[in-house]
Amino acid sequence: MSIDFSSAPFSPLMVVVGLGYAVFSSVVSGPLMIERELENAGWHETCQSQLASDLQATRRPETVIPQVPDLGGMLCGVYPELGELCQLIPDPTAAARAAQEQARALEDARLARATSGLPDACSCAEQVFTEQQRWAVALYAASGRLLEPPVLANRELGLSQALRSPLCAVEGAS
View 1 (tube, rainbow, N blue to C red):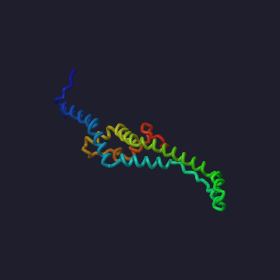
View 2: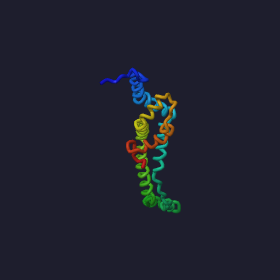
View 3: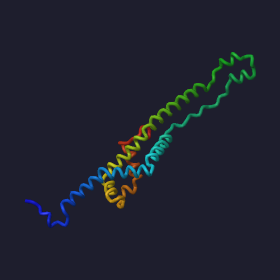
View 4: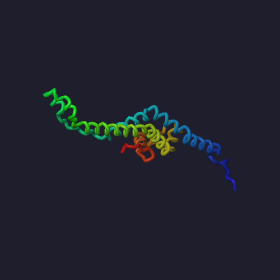
């Protein structure tokens, strides 16, 4: 039993061409169009700077080292002949300052490790967003940007959700 397409208001070739155009828009032109629009909007740089500022906000506050008078300096200021004895009196805050410097170095290393993954996280968010919204992107591309689905009109929200997804998690951003 065959189907007679001669009485249909469209030809089978038209259906094949329409399906081919939909696949082309979904696979090639849609993702390329969104990639270029995001590049022109500068979203990648904005994403990196936002994540970097979020990471800087997680920096642990520095501890305040109390000011203690330098007894060796005061003693030598009054009695210069006790120079050797002044050298033997230790600075009471030296250990605290050394510990603070070490903590600062560790914190800087943690932030540097976390910041090194920011470009990958932003690229991941772009790819996840494009993949999740493939058909909306295809409709947008196929219509020549005349039909803009609401998902693409609010693409900043979609991109930030993709960025916060477990697929694109940034170490140390929590």
